[in-house]
Image (cartoon, rainbow, N blue to C red; front, top):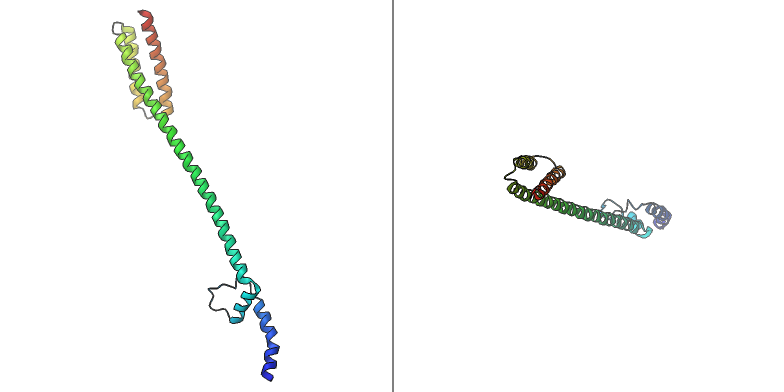
Length: 163
């Protein structure tokens, strides 16, 4: 009878001790936790609180991951767009070079008998070679080629007017 009365007197103490667990202490992988603590974790809702907290962290991480994927996709689109515009600019520059070469040849053929125009065409050819061989940026090359194109067009007009 004394044993029962001692157990009866100690049971509220055991229950209070078991109820004092926190969600952090209620780790299912913790093998050092006592049976009363496990019961306390189960009935106090600390296991569920831990699960809810972990699920919230997971949901937050998934949201952040989705945002990073969206940002990455946007960067990839911009990269592809920039790459495309660079290729377009290079194609325009190459087209301008081809047109200038063709126009230079045409003006040179028409200016065969005129030494003054022939000297200007030779000067333009030298400048064209200089621009093509320079290490300038594509934009700088395009500006120089545009200037040369205008000079050639002026020469072409002069030749057409002279006939």
